[in-house]
Image (cartoon, rainbow, N blue to C red):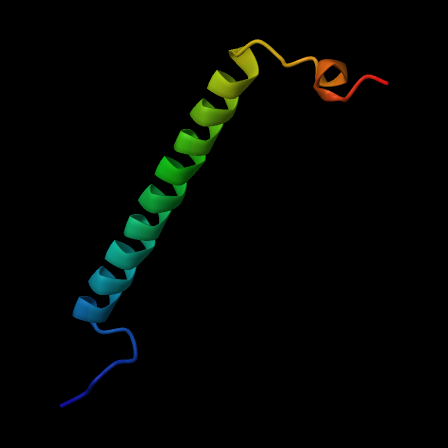
Length: 54
């Protein structure tokens, strides 16, 4: 039997793993982007009012 380095099952498994990784990275990027956009829309805090006055 001739076993090639890239067997069909191995190629399908590799493509599946790469697609799963791409989906995870895309979802994480989208979540981070949306959270950052939402945080920027919130009213900013005036930091100068946080300090003690002498």
